[in-house]
Length: 123
Image (cartoon, rainbow, N blue to C red; front, side):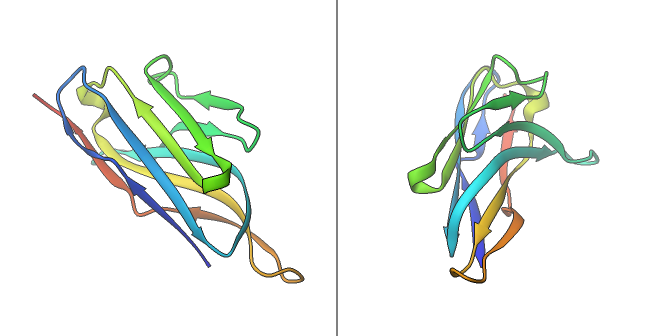
């Protein structure tokens, strides 16, 4: 099995910065696409940013120019650097990954979600 664990959330003032991390562990052979999503109270979960194994990225229009997604394939870890934070960025942030896992001869490919880390932007 595979686990994704997010960290780095917290309370920050408008204009501030946070860096989120998502660490994957378990019987991982490789990780393809990874992404950050967020969900505010009463809202649907939405894409924030995605990154391929090769490093190609795409961002939601609302965060482009403020957030940067990156990953370290050797560490099975993904990051989200969030700058110039706004009150509307307040949400529970989740990581998502397309993982090839298991033993040789019985490999499986599955999408996994983390439990989320809370980001609150408030003065």
